[in-house]
Image: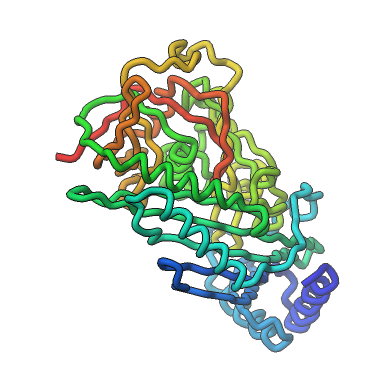
Length: 453
């Protein structure tokens, strides 16, 4: 699929829509070639190669109601059926909240990194993953297996076009390696940890880094001890803090606010929601984001959006319909549907220039006493109540005493996201690029930790 083929597909829909007196329509389409492998002690566990294509078509009737359908049949007959189905579905569209084209669907797009490479092939992927698994197991006598592993390459293209003349197209590739090791010692609980690495293609992935990180984390959890229940100074790793922020993205999600499932409201813009030390951005087109896209499901360009500036809520993420309700512009965070979803792209956490309120003891990186270092949060589906701001989550991490790291056997961290954001006592300078965004280590004062009874 190239620009010429995109134009041909759009023209085919236009011609057949006109024949059926359908004046207003848009569509999003994606095409992908995916290759993935998994192994179990050197034996191929799963080998998969697939080719997918799917088109989502929206049609507006004369009353402005929207009908939607999806199809994988891109022949003229398939597109005609989709137009008819979407047109019929529009009769049942929501009359109370109408969707329109994004007013930015024809705006200039930001340039993003694109790779026009060729697949490495299943055979190559399998060989690389086998060696990585073997190398990881050999890192320590207690590492007995790598039960969760995978290596994949995806080559995909995305389209958006509408009856108003908007036309978007981009192509990209992505490779993913994940390794989660399991370590077992006599009369002790099995311990596990892992690492994920992304690249545009297989050759971009730092395989040794993934192996070493998975091994180091797993080994660091071998000599575990229980932790006493109480209030602790807590340091979140970049991965863990981004996980927590994403879990409560309803705070700055306009769709969530409209649906009444957010702890903020329509009047929260301009309010202080966090420590003045916190800046939070969402930048779906960031150069370090392997999965970056130049436009969202409605064709709106993605861009760098300031969400929290020095603790103050500056912007929400919007689709076309939510932006219209809030009398603002869409932000490039929409899906494609009759009731459009809104979700964050790639969050960036940084320390604001106004750091006078930060704890000086932590500023000079001289950590005295003890604290909890949280590396990974688990069971988010059960432990997060986004509409209330509360969370209670099992975690993997360590109790740190005078630079000695002691793995925590089993514990949960609980609190309220509003208190967490306002109780930030340090945001470190050094940022880390993760699979979900960019963040430094973030320190919170007095979080509740419940040890295993």
